[in-house]
Image 1: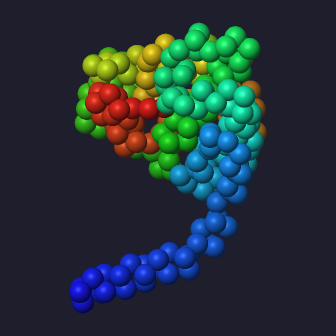
Image 2: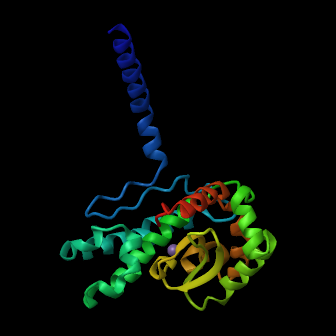
Image 3: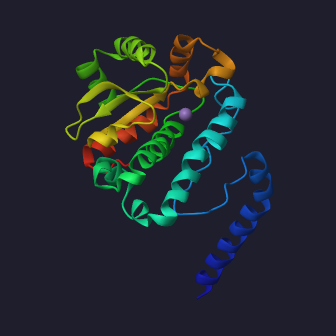
Length: 244
Ligand code: MN3
């Protein structure tokens, strides 16, 4: 009984400490979007200026809070009359776009694709960068010719995307990797595949800092790739549990 009481006291104290810290944490982050439907955008897992000097703070404010948020808001608006789009995980909806009513198919393709792509994108970056290790490093060597060749080929693929789109490394259930591009907000999920990671080559992702120099952005981006998150995603893909 006494240890129970003590545990409660410890829990209560921890709760108080967390509450005391809360205003400071809230101030440091972007304002949380109002919940107006089943879809929501998680806050960035790092401050907006954390990826400097490779991606500027202003871009990392505008890109999630306006561009990504617009996809989420649009999805919530579509879901008002079409709640079925929120009743299955996004990979399942995106893999079967042809089963949706034609009146919403293109809007779901663009906005859910955008939501899925950006949700992945924020996760697979972090300050400090690093190098691939373990299984994922071995798979890059086996399937993509090693990290240097991957970076060269990924950059070249990114330059070949005409207009707006994405470059992805996809992962098959058996762990095999492939380099692929998609236009607009299309996602490998639309082909029943999984994105291990990818880079956004829409101008909104880099224009404030790099203007038309997409090649420089593509090269600098490797400095903020979160290889430990990618290793987690690789393990999840092979276990069949990787989502967006
Ligand atoms: Mn974008």
